[in-house]
Image (cartoon, rainbow, N blue to C red; front, side, top):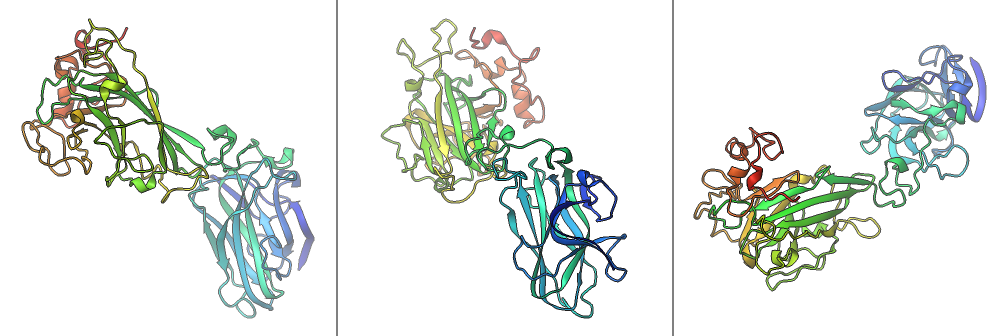
Length: 498
């Protein structure tokens, strides 16, 4: 038996390489100079014995295990960016005197504000524990055992850097543990020439686990990321308000620009959604209201709706600002289109007649909050995986009559909409497939780009040449029908602001 050297807390010459996105530790001497390793251990020794060696010529051996604290005997990896998969290593027990033995694995995040020079944050994922099955002493206790810990999704592939800390726990007796062949999915990210700190120093001012360079709110621990939809420009909502009749089908009865920003925390749970709604044109004689549903979300998940001034005799609100008596969270943005986009001459039409006065739109900005001021969810977490742009269900209330709604094709109405109108006149709505005419045409459109509306009384099909092809093919042909490409538009019948 050959002891290399008994160490307390010191950087040692372990093998540390990146190979196929793996950071490995083989414990073999002379593989790398000490200055190029950045592995560390506490209360461990190098050990060689033909009867207990795991692989190669050297394995790591703990001192006698007599503590239940994870900070007593341990191994730490260098800083690395964890990948996905399992952290694996081999262990065996050494000694005939032990009551129980276990291994605890924890992840240590980088924290630029931490005291000292190594900048280690508070260890997380403390629940990863491997308990040695019997026997833990005597005959058979020194069998080689394979240990595996799965890297959690909250840490894997997040572009943040961590150390992996493997702690050895002992209760009763003085038996030891031997470990070898550690393999961690991820990318080696330590800089031996700079005190083994991360290659790119991470600053996380608010301590939310997201480095400042990636954090849209570096001084706010509750918020971390912005997620804009549409990503580059405003989208466009268009409504034809004579449903269930097709009407003149000019799609300019109410035209809105919109964009929203889903603000999430470091775990990609929604903190709030910031909306911008811009009424752009009114080609209707009816005074319509506008709102939207957050499909799949109960109003119990909403902390507050802030920034709206919406009043009408038919509108009743919950304390959080959502519409009352709805199964789905419903927000009424404005109750009167004529109030938010006023014609200076007093008539109802705005920005649909090229000969008329152009009215510059005013944007309505407001916020729907999912969490309180401390960042706690009202009911439960709502993740961006469960709530996407498809959950945005905009609609108009026709001429202040609350039970008359027009939604996007296939989208369901709110609980306040009457069912009596469905299937009358030109409407062919059926359960699960609402707001389509008998020939499949919609009464509302959601376009992920800014497009001009038609001038008054011009059929939308004549303005956008491939719109009908898109509808008839159920979206399979000319999905880009709204783009400004050659022969796609007839600009002489579009209201283009110059």
